[in-house]
Figure 1 (cartoon, one colour):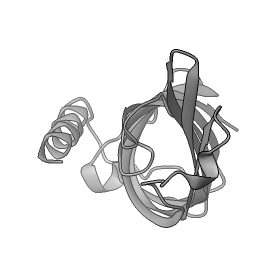
Figure 2: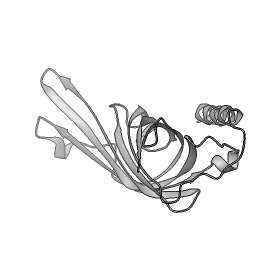
Figure 3: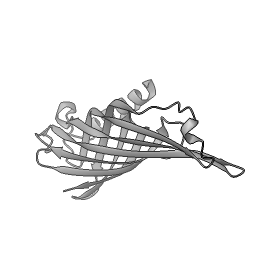
Figure 4: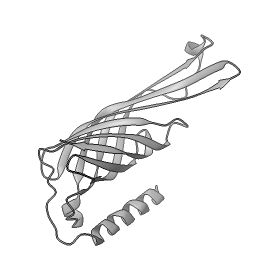
Length: 177
């Protein structure tokens, strides 16, 4: 956790160096659709995939929804098993360009909370999966995220997020409309 905080702080400081004047982040009325992959899954394996949608309510506040999918398993001499993880819920973000004095209109630095549900299932090809003790449970989740997106054009960009959810780090593409 300390390492992630260090890198986020370092990123924000470097971003602040390359900006000159303070300007309010134009988030109100903006819609973002993010799609990405996770690195550092909290579920012991697999490559998580996820999408999120955000709508700007005010200049610095956006709300939206997220959906994440992760699956991992093994195949030992014909015996196959796998876990499937589904995360879905709502999220809210504070866009902090004005707070940090970042005036680059292509860069959007944000952080926020998410509240949702995690669904976990286990399957194997033996037919006894209903008797198997599952160490993972379906549960409510409360997550934190901090990230940045950089718009490569007016409509397309990239993003990176750290936080708690299906993965420690998420990288992907953003569509703005």
